Length: 393
Image (cartoon, rainbow, N blue to C red; front, side):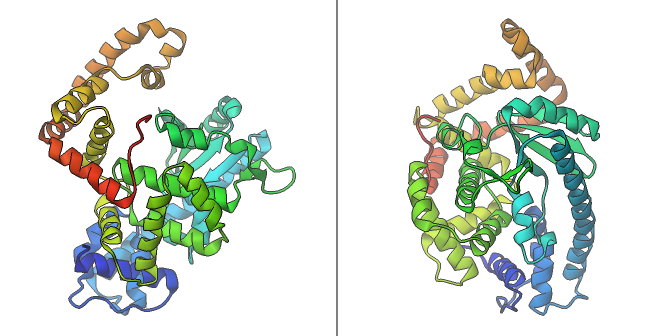
């Protein structure tokens, strides 16, 4: 079950989003959860909630949050200016795009600044990726890491993830479901290159993204707020959602998350399942925990074996011999010269030993500690809330 301090934080979130004062748990100490607030990127929300609930603005904890708020406002303004310039450039160059996640939900909050945004996620047509990259370079962005489904671009004021597809290909069920998104979207206005999903489709994507991260290592309180805010601001077809989520094997998890949102925002009585979901999210932070991500990786592999030694052996092999699709992203030369794969494996090993020794040692340590019981327990916790790794993934 969530503890008193986490319960107090939930009350602050509820107060900030409703604008109404909340009764905080007796003995609630805001200062003790400032690190948790920062890990979840909800300083503005917590500050607004604290003021609404009558915590003195002169208290050290509120002053600390106020300092965070000032920094966030500056970041937020820079992000919005950069995003505006980028989308205007896409319009001018005739590049079709779909804004995703925070860029869409941010304006729906009582104050847009409440919704921290670590990056801007934008889906681009596959055939326009090269043109989009030229626009990014022209605007001064530096090309970063490329993953299976997105390409990262950096600028001091904004980090952008240009998506090739909505879901990574290794999540085969989710990837296939969202593969034809461009066939169902419409431009926001005639002659515009900005496209948008209808509310039901966007929420399906938003919830699937939430479920994926919950399963794969954790997701934060801000994303729970996103689900609630989006549901409040849009009229959704619940019957349709359940029908489609069943295709994604997420209908049970969806019902459980709805009950969790009810417990948070409508103060409905908690159940063991809602408490488990809320505790998991509180423990995750904005991006999940590395040890949980590795445990989830092992759990995915446990579908092929229930022995920890075999699972860890398979994980080690996967880490040493990355599959071709991941190697060609890291080393683009493989797109033209695929026969160089064995050589590039060696190059990667040398790079890891020379420049990422600490990271390699940490992963190895976490893996050594992992037991069959932990893996089975993790899968059990996922099953309990309605999630499971698919055999085809």
